[in-house]
Length: 345
Image (tube, rainbow, N blue to C red; front, side, top):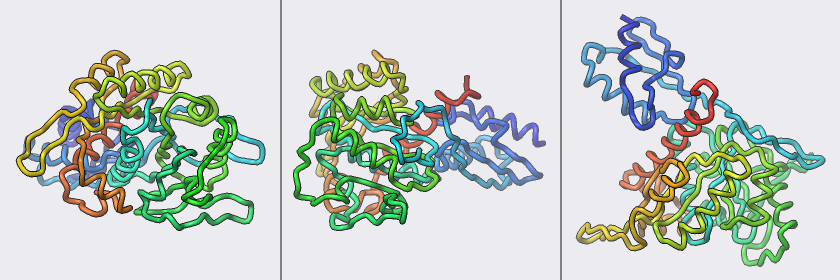
């Protein structure tokens, strides 16, 4: 009977589990099935199991237990500054954009919370030295960092997400007037001198562009992969293209593209309007063979929730946008594993 269950599990596939549930993820003992996932997609697995029970009613009485044990994937070697140490983080993913104003920081926090909901331990490094936004989105603008006896920064913790930002070290109203090398060094310190816990994913929210900070990160940090955020607008796509090209040139795989502000839906009549154009993100993804992990709408509710320091997943868990965030997070985690793990080759 377990052989039949195993075959059924492998045959049941989705956009997240493109090869079904692999045999090495499963332990079958009578009618008890233990599923251990190597990437954060617990809710996606639960949905697939419900489908499994509907399509194979002979196995509907089986009891499932799902655990997530995220695997560390290959990453670029890090250049650790003297006196510092490499972070105990399994996967470092940079969230980048070619230009500002595309909602990159909102995407970063939304993905982080969605990955946590999928069973992962997640942190955010606010890499926008000139305009740190994490304290605003976390709703703790006045919080300051504490330090260990050996002068390591302890990250703040909000809704189960670890985070660090220059905004916790300087006055929120002070201007960061630094030359490129100074800003790059500050970013290095935020990564290497923070005492992160054993995270599954650390998302690095980069400033827009392809300048000193981005190159420092791409060349010196232990990056696993990158996600690029754009809007469908031509001017944003042109800059996003430069970002993708930069990561590909320094051998950092781009495992996802988020097209933000894809459309606006009227709250009164439900009409959808493509304010910034259509198909731009999809065309760019095809050109560079990058998977699209989400088309996110321009939403007032998301903007209001982040301005108030209480993200949509926290303030309004039932909001329909949270399902969009969840799908993108599941796709990101799956893409990382399927594209980078040696077993998937």
